Length: 179
Image (cartoon, rainbow, N blue to C red):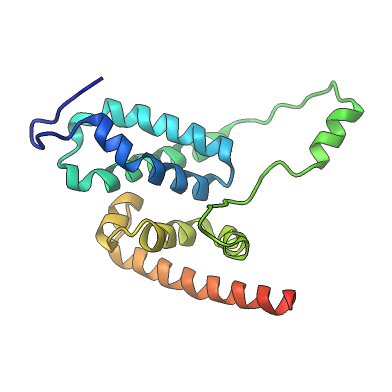
């Protein structure tokens, strides 16, 4: 499906997705904390991006545009899950109990990060983790991250700063505890 943008000659939906899909997935992993949920989030975000392709203003802002779609999709999914009434399975056997006892969520691991950083990053509040991730890992400008998170730039900068401080403390505690 080759869809060319009239304002940005040569940029197609496939090129934009190809250039930023890995970024969207890494960010989804940080937001959701698990691979399966991240894949679902990316899939739904890509569908929404395809539908909103005509709203992309320029190829230069494609990364922030796609991340904003992913972030809003994450918030919508989280809100919908909070409203959902949990189902109770009355047909329980020993295998189900054993399976429930095993941990199913893995930390938001990213290949390039050490295990200590990954664990500490997972302990940060979501708002701090999002700001830190977008600015320091995905290397967005504060204004782009603010657009993605739909927050004022000062709030994003403040959250990232506080996240770095908290991350530093968590890592120092981990080093002292592991020594």
